[in-house]
Amino acid sequence: MTLLAAAVLALLSGCATDGQITDPSVYLGNPFQHPSEAGFRALVQANCGPLSIGSTTVNALLGKNTAFDSGITALYDGDVSNDEFMNQVLLQYPAPDANVPATGCIMNQLAQCFAETCKVQTAAEREKMAQAETEAVKEIESAVTLDPSDLPTKDASEIERMIETSKEDGPKPLP
Image 1 (cartoon, helix red, strand yellow):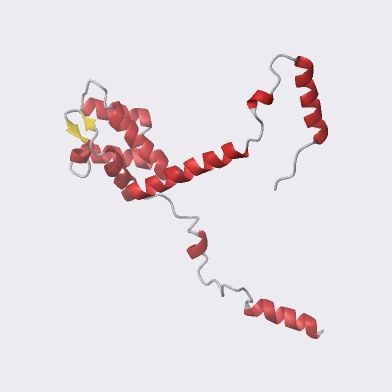
Image 2 (cartoon, rainbow, N blue to C red):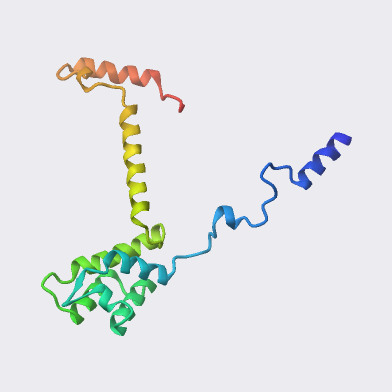
């Protein structure tokens, strides 16, 4: 009985080594938080700003032209589709390239914002991510233990034997 009381007391007092968690969102993030339009606009400005729309640039229009701003807001809110947005921009700002580089960039920022984060990355952060990807590729490549020269090139019966052997061995447990 005293053992049970001690266990309940330990549970209630919180015996975790990190202490009691008072605000889980500090560790988990807010699952109900959604991307902000301001974050989307910051991504557009940072990544699409110098691209041309008609005879001007995205940065020259963003926040300074009410028609363009209302189109950006409508795109963000889902009130217009990507195609409708492209058509509206092309009608207001005709261009030989149909403004595809700029409008495509804007739509990519929206996808980025909703899929991952609306945070503008610094050059150092982009470099760090590129290094992590390169290291992951190297790690995967180093895990390949089969030398392609060991593979049979023309002997179908040898290939079948290798397939049958791998089926007999079954799946390998994860390390």
